[in-house]
View 1 (tube, rainbow, N blue to C red):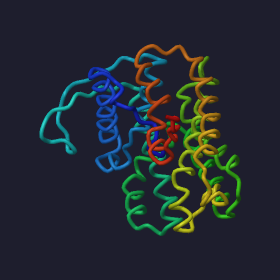
View 2 (view 1 turned 135 degrees about the vertical axis):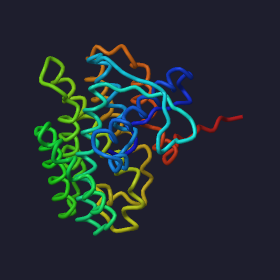
View 3 (view 1 turned 30 degrees about the horizontal axis):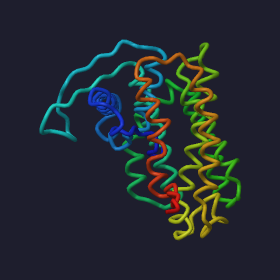
Length: 277
């Protein structure tokens, strides 16, 4: 995804911050065990959010431990994983593979095509296990590619395409929670796409890359962007609040109410009102 679904660990106590990091380490271990060492290149904290969300909802049995790894060879680190972790790891690889292919087509990146080659075999197995999710990824990224190729000034349309991808990604199984999860994922995907467009506006304009807000380059956009993002995140939280979450809900709340804004607030800080003396 885009790297915005991260926790503000400074707002978590030591125990909850350790739990969050152990989730990430468990995801890394699952990625490498299921899809090879090269799969670790696709690792990001965004999928840790999905692990915590679905684990809080379904409460699967977890295994865990404390061990070193290639990334951190000098000291053991706590980790935990479950069937949810394995699902998120597979989705991470499938999305990473398609992103590599997209980077190859867009930029001719030799690094991207090399990474895609390393992930191709693992991706084939994941497609067999999760055809609905992988099909949604292909359709959404194809729609985005068409919008970008035509340079359409269509932020809502582009965000909807990524929202449909996230909606299917959030649905692990067809059950009583699938409608709420799909709606939440769809709204969150729209938010993330618009967030990324807001954050990358300057760089995309400079490099002549597609951005649905190119027409707003050079304007004072902080309040405009924040209003749009608050509306989209509010829709996501509306569906999120319908889910009976207990375990790790404090970490999830932290991510959705604070973590997702961390980068935006640094780039577009809220102005401090000057008090009259």
